[in-house]
Image (tube, rainbow, N blue to C red; front, side):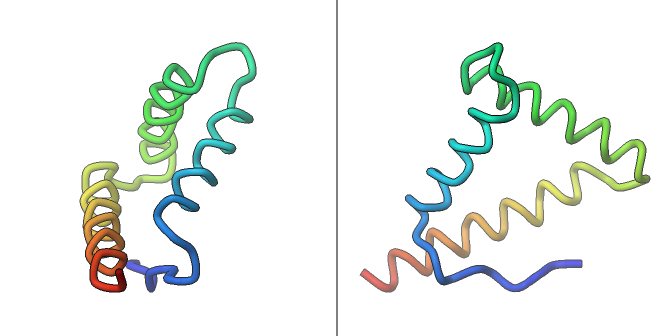
Length: 75
């Protein structure tokens, strides 16, 4: 299930891309509240699709660490 890491963009660009997604997620609240709702909704999605949120979050954390390491190594 683990996909290859996208090395064509920087970590700052990843953060900006996510900031834009949060701003669109719900225009009624600020981005911090949207992040909380998005994470809660991701858990509901996992329940509905019989996925383990914890397992997916650990994979995402591994990707995050690899992206940090790759960018630090490149600089």
